[in-house]
Image (cartoon, rainbow, N blue to C red; front, side, top):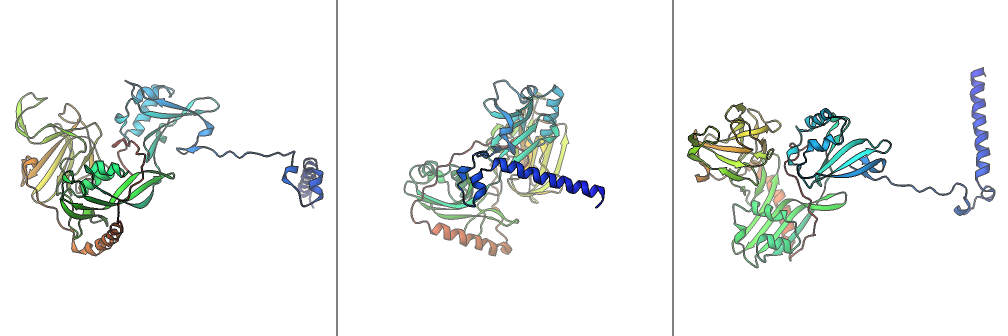
Length: 441
């Protein structure tokens, strides 16, 4: 054995002997004498409590100082950041890194954030904002480019509910502890068949839907998969179907339960300026035709394609600002003006679906405030779409009917199995800041 090997083996032997000496002092004598012992005899080592770390937002919160930050009146996100960053430039860098993914203009007084600071120095490290139960955003106060949007995993289960109408659809759904979002989904699904606001006491409703569960907590109803109505207005089944080619609600025979065009390109907006052949322009200050319909909405509100189509243009002009024009058929086209930005992937030649986000409300071009000017063409001429009798949507292609019938029959079985009113489970709905995150994964 050479000298190096001798030193190595001598070191190992010394370590082994030292370990035996230490154990002989720690372990009680009675434990060394028998294989059978009571754990209470081990007195010197004692017991160690294993503390499970509080993991949330991807951090072990126990390793930080935490502080709830409330947004005060007249406070901006920039002013909030300035209180936690080393200088103003760092705050601007954080905003620049995040503005392409989220709409910071929707952060309002009364909302809350969570600040994580170093345990050692108490220097601010991260600022976390939770726009709804499904996601949260993390601002790295020391590394602006490390901004991220995190989506929580959702578990889904199939549930059934039913009830007998007693008042309006909304009142009935509330009476049976169903999630209120099911009311709007059922109204939308049956819009082409019935006006459910005219339903009567004693009418029957049944629904099959997805229930969303996050971290073991039931948060709200997900998608309505099937619905049934029988009463004063008639009888109707509707089914949700999506095979990649066909998507939406259909009746038992595969006919689409939707209108060919949406009523408006934005949700929850109001008409601020209607179609007119003689309007005083608010900027040019002269009477000129306004061949579109203006919908006022908050900056960054998603703009939706009102029907399936192909992008003819996604461009910019001094008057229209950023705009998208869609061709829906040889007869109909639509245009959406004054966008703040285009949605990801929107470019000439891109095919889009009804309801797909194509851009976001802004005030680019000649505009006094955030809105979308919606223009409608029929046979190459701009018209007031609100006066049109638009065609019915195309029926489902025969190639998809076999797959549709499989889905329909399964949902029909679930609906038929409901023989009496089944109350839902009262869920605590979480407020959702719609439009805060521009693009979903």
